Image 1 (tube, helix red, strand yellow):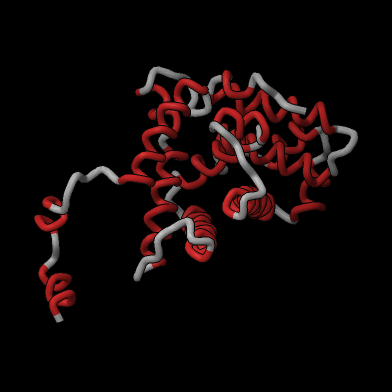
Image 2: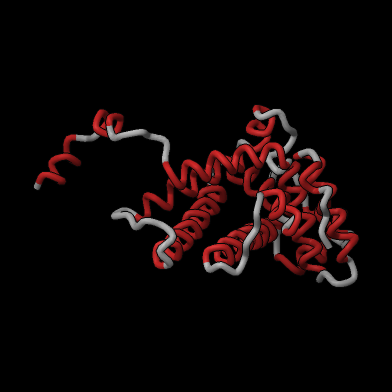
Length: 237
């Protein structure tokens, strides 16, 4: 079922309302472990990992705290399950787009077809902002996912190859991560409440697609101005 109201909600209320809608729609078909993970992902995104207890997750999922531990072993195990779910979603959707199985005209359309992207994005933004060991591990996985997607694009002839694929993957992952962490600030600057509002996402995607396709520099003047001597020496040799 499409939830067409999703792009219109605020960044804070949208995550909470969306997960409650998903829970009501799927309560009879979603497994207990999935319900627990969905509740945890929403609470971690809203309150932070440290500010969320197993008991709160259990209450949100309408199960006992013991059942949470039964399925995930610990609160940390629950966080790892949320990480895995988020990374799997990113890998799957990127792959579908790169191999041509998924086509969408706008970000708003993608969100309408994949409303789970909102709580996942909020979760990733909150967890990456912690700057702790868990955040570093999560970022490493995002880099690996970006590297695989870029490699797929290169092999398909859609993306130019590079002599330093790891650095490019790190740069792309950092770019994407910054939009997750700074989403609310980006939306506010552009006069909206959420980066998923059509009027906000539309402006961003047009500019980013232009940067990806054509770049921003008119010539190589600035590139020459900041070139490192050792790079020039390597090219001359």
